[in-house]
Image 1: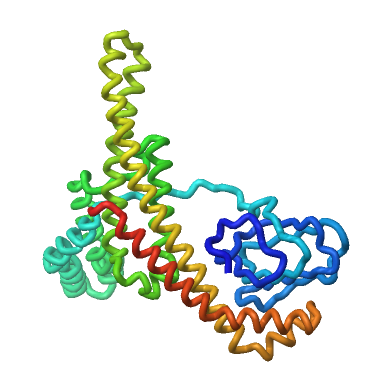
Image 2 (image 1 turned 120 degrees about the vertical axis):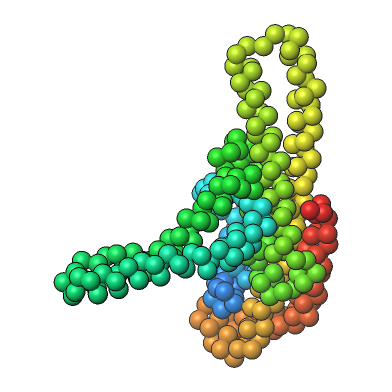
Length: 353
């Protein structure tokens, strides 16, 4: 196997896992005469697509990010000539960021106040019952809307109380609108990295068991967001001053302040880069984890796999390819363990909250 996924070449012969051994993209070999290749597509590599024999002269192949593996036998090497096509870039919708301790605190407040909040619907229902006794059935029909409001008022009361308590703690959360464009761009990187870790399969499976991501990552996001908000406010102040015109003496006095602001931006950017490094290592572990599962599935249903590939690739090419995939199982497990170790080590490089 090739170490890393940043290789720009593929040897002329061998089986290579996409995302583990080689990156996806368009590859070209200068002479494919008499050679062949097979792309194992599909979630488990069960949709092979092959070409045999290759004509004399240059040949190209597009390896997709969703491909499982690439089997090749050509006289020359393959070179990466274009990365995999990227989907149209859409700026992610930023979410508000809150002090991780805020939600539990609000829950405790509601819990302590819940007996009092429960009195409101009980009082309303009691009034409806009393109206029924005094006004009879006809008057009771008129009180049905009041009864419905009484039944729903508990949740309404809780929501209103929670909203009021949240307003009193305005310093405990931030909205994206409080950041300028530079701050929002950095926050987008933070949230992208955190989502990549939290949504990863290795995290859901508990394979990153030495890292409490549910606690550590929200705290990292909150601390970084606070810094970005302060930086945005200072940049806004500078823009307002410059908009009014500034004297040379004031310009000279502001220069040290700009340098300190730049120093702060570089420092928080390094912290964000540490998060992104952790996310990259987690993605790499995810790729190995998925490949391991896919390889296990292929091995388990090899007899079905033989029939599937027979329609696309000659039997004398497909069967050895499947066997070689199975033989690499142990090596892929070692790769998975290595990727998990790298992800865990990357997490330890994050600044302590």
